Amino acid sequence: MLSTLALLPALPGTTVAVTAQTTAPGDVLPSWREGPAKQAIFDFVRATTERASPTYVAPDERIAVFDQDGTLWVEQPMYTQVVYCLERVPAVVEIKPELRNVEPFKTVLSGNREAMAQLPLRDLETILAATLTGMTVEEFQSEVSRWLETARHPRWNRPYTELTFQPMQEVLRYLQSNAFKTYIVTGGGQDFVRVYAAKTYGVPPEQVVGTAGTTKFGYGRDGKPLLTKEPKLLLNDDKAGKVEGIHLMIGRRPIAAFGNSVGDREMLEYTRAGQGDLLAMLVLHDDASREYAYGPAAGLPDSKIGTFTPALYDEAREQGWTVISMKNDWDRVFAFEA
Image: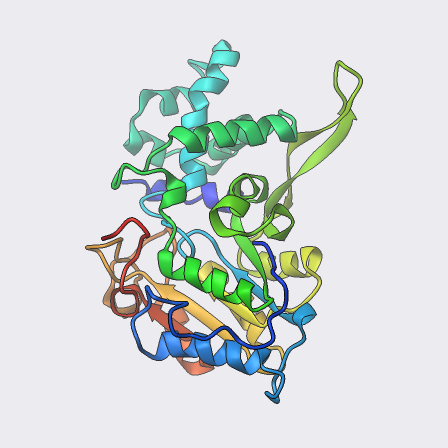
């Protein structure tokens, strides 16, 4: 989460039973347009799940990892968890009114986004500590659940959990129906994503690998044991940290990886370094009318959130990774589109 909050200056599944053969591709990816990207998914599933295939993979080894922000749902104009942290500040100040005139809380309460964009990293760390720690795990889960019920994205005025990409939801279901175990590997907070991952993506909490802080075991006033979230970083699940998190939490090398930015490079490299038929895909946000357009790869506008550099684009081409064009490969972006 530290790596996520550091970008604030940019302000403006459940596995099912193994089937006898690959699910027929006729209508399992209806939001995808016909083309190399859609075909790559079908070819990969066929090659890894049909028993007659020379690259058949046993169900235990069918591991697919997905970045979340920018890969499974909208990440612009600000990461969802950053929005949560900023909107939690008034509640923190209500509990501790002495913070009202203390920085950086004073700046956040002012609502001045330009001023918030200038907050140094040490102030962002203070916001992190105040809004994400100091409570039990259950209290945090309840707070996040309540926030998600009312929070709305400023562009679509819809809950953030409705702003998942329908084509990627179809890929998740397609893989899950073919005995793949799907994991979310995200730079966002692990506890934050675990609150909604099962309902939103069909991915259970134990299959979410994210940036994590430490917890401390203790006893409540009623004598019952509990875990309290502490302001100490345990795993920064971004860039190389994603690979480290995969080893720590999953213990198997993935055979499929999906991302959208430089933060996912090492995860895709690690996946493609394995043996057999492997799949690596990157979502390119090049559709400003239906979502957002940013890169700066392919001549798109630069962005500090979800940066997709020309160097990453070149590496994808050289290494045989599939670049998904949101504009050209997706027939629709969201489930609520007509």
